[in-house]
Image 1 (tube, rainbow, N blue to C red):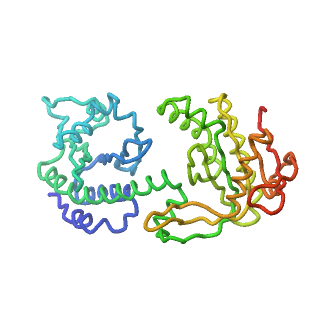
Image 2 (image 1 turned 135 degrees about the horizontal axis):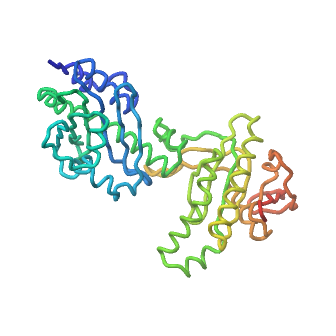
Length: 383
């Protein structure tokens, strides 16, 4: 006799002690084992609102714990997904059972043969119904010689409703984090989720400021179709964003064909390391642009200073960004890249902290700044 009442009560209580979705799954499975249910494998498959990922699979195996696999968007159109129990249950909302030890069991999904080779004798796929009507999928498998007993199947079916509530909560949390990361940046998103959502809620951050712009964008927009222009901009940004992220920066805003990013420095001693990281990112982005889109040209300004990072806006419409004289100076320097014929130009403050000698260009009067600003060219690899 399998008594899963304690497991049900734990799930209904919100799975106390489980700090992540994978801990909910592992906690459920371990408690089912302790209750006498001969579980070998269990999984939860949840689709995601994500720019690159179709969904996430959490797979528990007895004695191994939980593994997490993200499926790319293209996976939805693959034969592996279309011919899977997950696809069938998600599409119809109807659960299925395959007793793999029965002589007449249909092996109508390729994964069933793989599971049989792994010793699985009985397999269940059941809908996880979210409150908005979406159907996700949970699966259960056993290697017990006689498979699941009918009361055990009924117990697993009864667990699906509280599991679905928890799965939906964790999916919503992940969606919120993903959308914030996508639209405002990783660190800014974390601050927003932590409650920093009041207008004027800002902090002073010492950082390297990156401000770049695509040269000749106006005639490009006149010449290209909307689809071609969008593809060109995406290619242009693809040459920059990965390099910025790889070296510790965070993209805060796309300004048409421009991009604003910062590399937070933390303590003063980190200024040199921060500027070195920004330099590596700038050179990597320029090399990517030269390799992937040699006809495109850009201007990039690098500055180091204090910025105000936080919420700015009007009414209930806010923007999480950075502002201040340091950002204004970076914008003026970026405008000088075309005049001076150098794709990457740094301020004196940035050059002071840079770990290498940059090429002095002289002092220039910039609009909005009372004193002339000394500017420095950043040698580009391969130029």
